[in-house]
Length: 473
Ligand code: DUC
Ligand code: ZN
Ligand code: ZN
Image 1: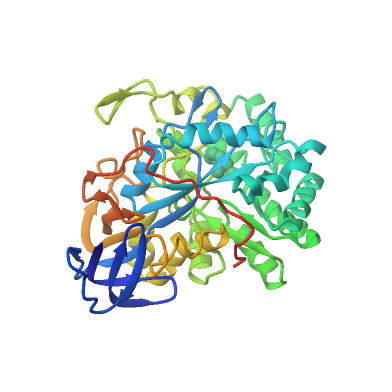
Image 2: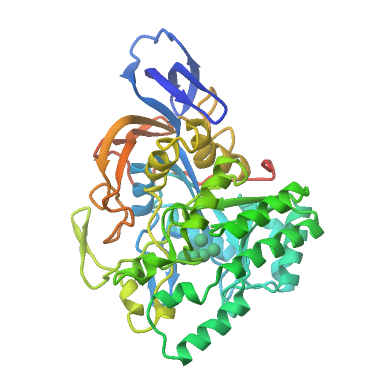
């Protein structure tokens, strides 16, 4: 047994000063003045906050892209997540070019299961909707997968047509599943990219210029309209624009069952970062926009109009020709340099899974923009509810998994690569002054992060089977 004594427990709905008793993998009591049974290990958390382990519903570990692969696998990425206070991650399974959805799931289990260091679930990408695929979508529930991701961009690669997305929504809705949408306008992007290359524009700032904000605004509304027509729920991933937030608000006010997620990169950075000499570090899709978009997304979080902060963690090395040290070994994985002569060849994505909680705490809660309870909701309780993990995950209460973060609200640090554990050679938040940081992290009752010390290991994370018991927020 473990007793975490005298901390301040911050859940999505309330904050209370209480002790937490953990027995095995579960929380068994949360109340003041618990008298510990003989032999209980006691941790004094006076002056500390106790947060539910973070739930990041949007990661891409070990994802093949262009001529490389995202540089965090299901071990290194999980470890980085844990150091940042996240104990549950959800990864996207690509639909195989040949073979069934179940084959894709099996392939992802083969990669993830032996390496997992925190608990994890899967979403299924639907990127080719033939009759066979449509017929087996409900069978994903037998595999513990209740969520489907579809794309309005990446023509000829991942994109479905609007009619196909409508079909997926209908099928998902009829089977108690949730559709997730990548909302950009693929046709406009295709034309702008072709025009840019024809005009000899190859630098990385053209990544942003060829993926316009209006395309995202249009796509969010189009997705909401398709969901309304299908009377099915929709979750829009990585929202990046003020206009998209407006469309989300518009649709929700009219009773459309649509929810939204944004990510740290869309709250902190703008298209101007792409124009820097090292701008490739910021290349991801959709791109970051303007300071006004950042502000509107913060406001949507503050007003509870957007439900989740995920990450879309999909890191690549900035210079994949120069190794870094990871756990005593030299590692180099081709990265952003692949697109040095052509922005369309820059691997899309960036590191964030370990940054999410610390940066959102300082700039959200520390700045008085969101409350600590909203922080717990956005980073843990809400994704746990939406993705069918609540109340096992997302809350500090009796019966829940003992995924616990002891958070030091007084710890000040100049953040960067020295603290984040992502397996890449840069951190976007380098030099940022933070106040508030995870001190100890427990996964189902086991201490996996103790300050700077890693006590977790590959294979400790469990696959989280999910069904139709989830909540629309
Ligand atoms: N966007 C990225 O930048 N990377 C991975 C997938 C995605 O949608
Ligand atoms: Zn996406
Ligand atoms: Zn993604």
